[in-house]
Length: 203
Image (cartoon, rainbow, N blue to C red):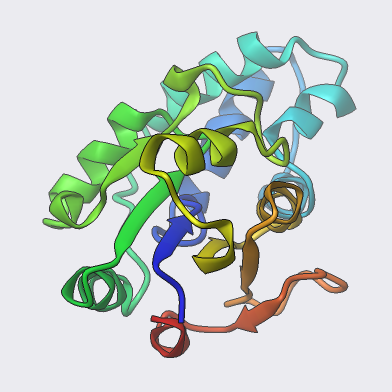
């Protein structure tokens, strides 16, 4: 059905949120701010990490740098969601492509993929190092379309947040909402799934 699968990473391919949440809780403590896991998680899922900085009137670049530093020290090893390797392999076996568009650094994303022998299944990772505007801005998706001469009508953007879906819509590609928690409502994606296994029907 689709030829190019553009994946979000955090919360879509890998369960990294426990690590991210803890990183922001510790970073906020540096500013004398106490927050809860529930509050930070809700902000991250509904909005993005930039909203945490806005809420507490902090510099986002500085807060993000602190949080990422703490992330690396958290005793939590993120793993891919059940079925991730299988769907990535299915895409490649059908001579189609996987790409990743993430707010996580490409270096960190690459390492996590390598830890589970998944890196060879991904054509390209687009992260902050590319210096594109953050999702939901569609610039990074336009870059992939231009670089690989892709047909937007055969592409799908897959993610667990509204900003992933919005980025796909703005780029003129199909959108698939990975709703494994049934937490967010009114996400206007073209398709909705609750597990990786369901995505096979789109290959």
